[in-house]
Amino acid sequence: MLWVEKRISNVQFIYIYACAVAGRIHENETLFTYITGKNYTFYNPLDVEKPAFLSEVNETAYMLEHCPAGFTFDSSKCNTTACIVDTIATCNAAIGLASQATETDNEEQAKQLGKNECPLL
Image 1 (cartoon, helix red, strand yellow):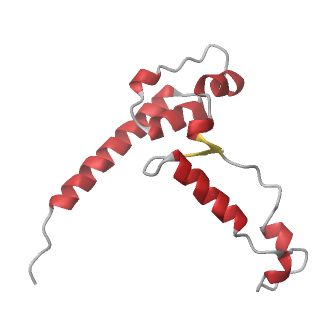
Image 2 (tube, rainbow, N blue to C red):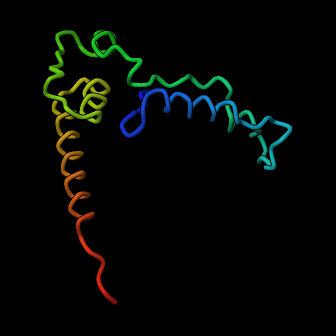
């Protein structure tokens, strides 16, 4: 699983993850009553794999292992985190570039919305 680190630094993101893991409650602290066949461990598995933060992933090595032979990735065309993550996760540059276009459009719309003035009531 890849976690996107866009608006905060890698160190902050890893720290937040570590705090979340450290702050987990223990089974004897739960306030929930579970349905038959389910328990604390079912909803709070302790063997969850640590996510791979984007800054910790070697994109080339990841794609060599997970993408079909012959797949190439021109990282100079990806200018956003969404493009990089979607390209390496799907092994499809077109999907990554589409995500990049969507992200760019959304950021432009957000900038425009920020310029709008509130109506006078």
